[in-house]
Image 1 (cartoon, rainbow, N blue to C red):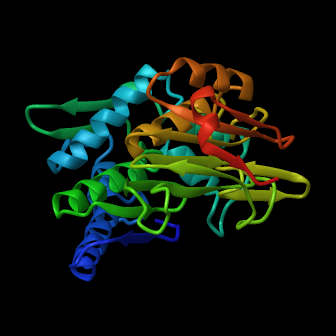
Image 2: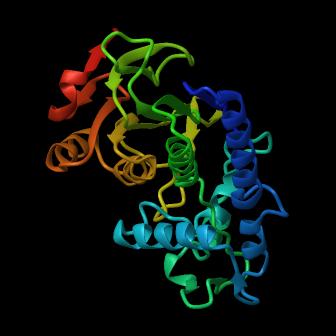
Length: 302
């Protein structure tokens, strides 16, 4: 998944549960990856413009949920963005800045309306040849939620799931007298490991997206990996990173993706109006904006 994964639980049979959790992650990677040609998802992409492909119920539901979320967000979250992602390939050795013509060609292939879903047959059909679904904006959240469900079903009452920028806690921390988990927030303007804040968390998800995670540097210009489906270029605004605190990681992935398209002030206004979501925004000028409900849980380190 291109990140460091850490799973930690308190349970008498922790080693066995963690072994099974690792197998779950390997299975998710094999089936959901947009970078492995033999994954279940890539079998759908390989038949774009040719025929519908029947998929497993869980993959179908995530594709359907991603499609619905994307349409409702006016494509700010766009699971059809695969051709554009692979054109830029930011985060890989062959990353480059494409030509305007190349970008325009890819924009014609990333319309969510061209994903045809058949609920009764559980099939996915991409109407245009060259289309590709990429679940990268949702997958880690889905994986984290599934791991938490598994651990809790096995009786785990304390633990932490860290999928690199996506943290999900289970119950209370047994190592903290106050029972809370302290989740660090990376300073997006400094090297990894430099924290700007700590969020006290209990049985919730903390998802962070930022312009520092995967970057293409061309001279003095930096291109990050969060794309605008309308322009074909990385999103341009004053946001350096956005952290969402919610009950489920999938919700955190959704809101970090769609809100990242707005300015920092608009994001803060949205967060203060949303009853079940809290958040923290760091601007490119290193200004930190915290939603009202979250302020009591945040300790600033700088």
